Image (tube, rainbow, N blue to C red; front, side, top):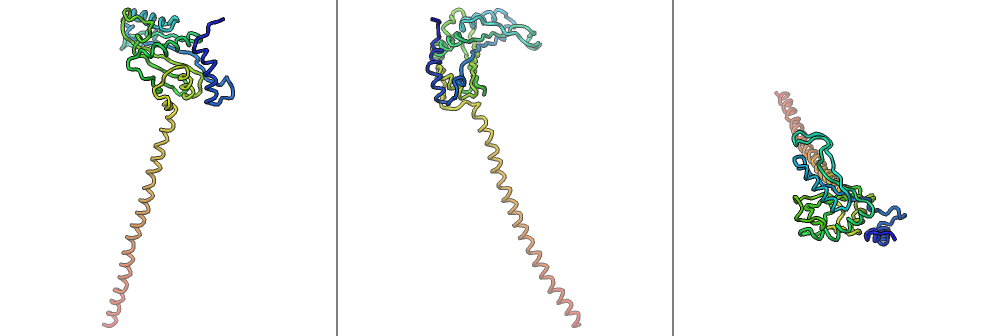
Length: 249
């Protein structure tokens, strides 16, 4: 019998049915799934000390259980003494059983060791079903020996899913055990459209006083024209009196 990770077995037996019930999928193939996990770590100080890349490679390899590779710079930057092709970071991509094993260790062992931990934020979604999470200290992983580390540093963890929206991706990751801080709230990428509609409503409200101002201007002009007409009417009798006085003379 082949080995099956705990989270993968849980996904096939229980999580798929719960997601179909919640989002009313017509086909099992529509259910979102976790495709890969990418662990990346930038080592900018490696420009002056190349041994830091070796330390980072060893740490990420121990954490992920898979051989990590170094990422090279794509262009020259004279101000940082950086040349094209120099190693500036480390990354590893996990798929299949190793992906589920890392997620299981990350949720059950690493996150509880974070100082003052009360959940991960739901602001790391990119709008296409992917979630980015930052770790500030690598010592939260039990595979790292504190006595042998060179420097306290963090890393970025990206969860790539096949979900079409951030809400589906958030529900999938929470079912897999990722503890979100505000699970009831929608991800930020989903609420941006409603925020943009607010200025349109304000613009419509601001147009209302303009109509009142025009009516007020028309009323004042009508009132101002009335005395001129009365003055013209009063001038007519004065001219007739002058003509009658001339006839009498």
